[in-house]
Each structure stands twice: as C-alpha cells, then as structure tokens.
Image (cartoon, rainbow, N blue to C red; front, side, top):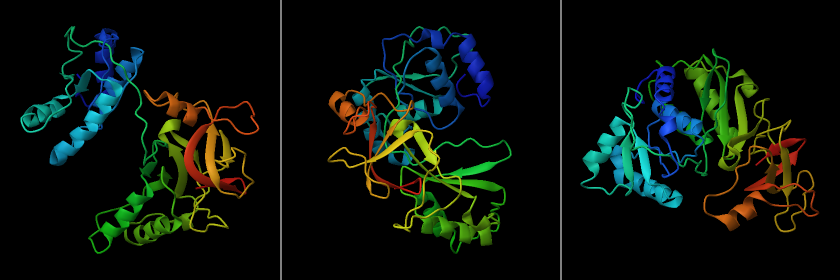
Length: 322
C-alpha cells in the first residue's frame, strides 16, 4: 500500500497489481499527501500510466481553512475531479468536513491498493506540475554527504532562533554543502552570519565560506534548477550585497532590455531570459500569458524561443548575479 515506509516494496506492489494501468483519461487528479514515500509512489505510478499531475500539500491541521482555500484554487484551476490521498489526510478531511468545505471533488484513499484489490473506481488522472515560486532546490550528493537545502530566509531564521538558545546537542560537523537562494536573491551577509555562528557553536566547517555554500538560481518554469556557483560566495564588484548564483552555464542565458528586447551589455542589469530543454510548456489554461512568457524572441531575432523569468539580473566576469 501507499503508506508503507519501504518505497521499493510499495512501488513494486502498485505496479504488479496494475494500479497504474487502472488510470484512464476521465479525471484530473490532485494528489494530496504529506512529504514522504506515499506521494512518491503515487506520482511514479501515474507517470508510468503516461499521465500528468497537480501535487499539493495537505492543509495544516492548525490552519485548515487557509490550506483549503489554496487547495480549492488549485483544483478549480486545473479542473480536477478526483483527489488522491492517504489514510491520515483522509481522516483529517472526514473530521473537519463538518466545519470546513473541502474542494467538491471525489476523494480516494489509496491505502490498501496493491494488496489484491481491483479498484474500478480509480480512473485516469491528469497530472501536471503547478508552477509557483520555489524556495528550495534538489541537489544530489554522494551517499556520505549531508546537504542542508533552503532559501536564505531559512539561514536567517536559524541564526536568529539559535542565538541565546542551548545548541550543545547540535553537531553540524558532517555538513559539507549548504545550498541557498534558488528563487530568492542570495544575500552574502546572511550566509556569513550563519556560518560564523554555527562554526563556533555547532562545529560547522566554515572553510572561509569558499567551498561550503553553493548559491544557486532556479524557478519552477525551468523545473527549479538552472545554475549554481561551485566556488562559494563570490560577490559582485558593482553590487557587493549580491553573490554569484552561477557560472560555466550549461543553458543559454541572456540578460535583455525588457523594452527593446535587445541583449544588454555585460554588467548592465536587465531581465534574465533563458533557453533549454528543461523549460516548461506553459501555464495551464493561460494561452496568451504562456506565449508571452515561454516564447519570447530577441531583437534582432536569433531564431531561439526564450523563457522570460521576470528576474532582474546582470552578468559580471561570466557570472550571474541577481
């Protein structure tokens, strides 16, 4: 079943039982799981069926109404007719339905699927990635490495909360990578403050900030990740308050004057445009906005379609600053 902690066993069980084969094209589905293998198995099963998805976090039990308002916007926007979830989230739905209005779609508890059930009620899902501002980026590391991944807001909050608190039981000596920024600007002073405090109190290997931090840039329209700075915190000469978030690019970047659509000279701020095979197809149900955002052309036209990120950036010494 989906709730098994053994992802491999759960995945095999779903696939062998033909769960993904029962998904047919009648429904758009909004999977609503807490982070964990349950969601992963459901997502992979639907991908195997050749369908798309709209992943969602379940509402916070302490703020149910607020969470449901967000969930309703998503399900309405994509035209979902069915929600997949597990036993725990389904129990939350049942116990709160008298006081709160959940989206008016069919809800299906996936626990137990793969244990011999032949569920004819579960038909095909429409799964697609919901584009929104992202504050974290997935980074793969060697098995023995531990990475702390979050936005610079997370570093600032950690430093603030730790000040004056008992941190004697926190050991960060095993941390070798600190990724940061993604959708927000990377602020060198915040990162250095974090490193200085936790190097003293929690055995963090500071290493003069050269190899510890990995500032990066990403956005949901490009499956989050676009580039990263492997040489640590490198500040701009013209903007010392900004850190490089990428160099040695493997995708096509252009800093563009948004009014003229001409490429800006190096060092001149402009809107960041990019082109690569990881750019999304567009925004669901928003044809005009998708055309303007995902099919931008330079002046003069170089024959390439660009994604307009809307982010002000500049290139300095071959490095991206924003």
